[in-house]
Length: 302
Ligand code: NAD
Image: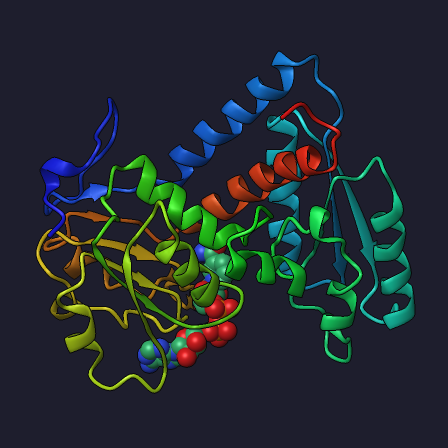
């Protein structure tokens, strides 16, 4: 069991009304972004550049991309945004991504997902070289992850790992349940948690899992990556467990996570808020990946 004494609390870290440590993603994002800015400035500020590709006018996608550029600026990085209309067509999107792939001044490429209906997203992703794949989504990046080779891993899964590290949640030999098995979040996160050095004993739960409460209630770490509002209740959680919420449901009351925060914070040892937990960490890790990408390309001192 993760006892609260195991957790790392530093000045200003907050607890929930029930006493759980609040794993604050905004705070950790700011810490990571400040560290990236320091690292870049310390070697004379060589250009490190993130390029995003946004197709169409989906409002949440526009907001996500805008945030990425704001935070890139704070991290001392350059950023470019290629904006195309929803009806630009497959060939034009592929042309833009292909040019970024061949541009040595661009270190990281992120194609904002989802592309509008009618696009072959796999084909677009396949044009991103693994060393520029800051979203960690290409087959080559996923293959490197499975084989334990150096490479770029997905920003949201990496963000979850950074939260566990920052708040001192023990992982070695601990039981972790990841709910959700997508290639974007659940699957790469499960692989990362089981990796040597992190060493959790991982169970992957999904839509066909029978008795989710029974699967979760002995876990030391529970991560919801489903997108079903308040799926995870206090009944799922062992007292003292760490609970991380990745799921996002947009309701009339605003954004709601997979975790019933009010009920779960009373039993958990540590918990992320939603919003303000994994979302900001996804952006922080995108920028961390952009610096890693510049290093992989030999554009930044190792
Ligand atoms: P997805 O739809 O591809 O996958 C959802 C997964 O949940 C599937 O593997 C499915 O088997 C599982 N699932 C569905 N119903 C279930 C149930 N009742 N019990 C157990 N498992 C169930 O979604 P995704 O792309 O992996 O995203 C998951 C959620 O995370 C979404 O809400 C998405 O918006 C959110 N998300 C958040 C961030 C972030 O930064 N916080 C980043 C990416 C995605």
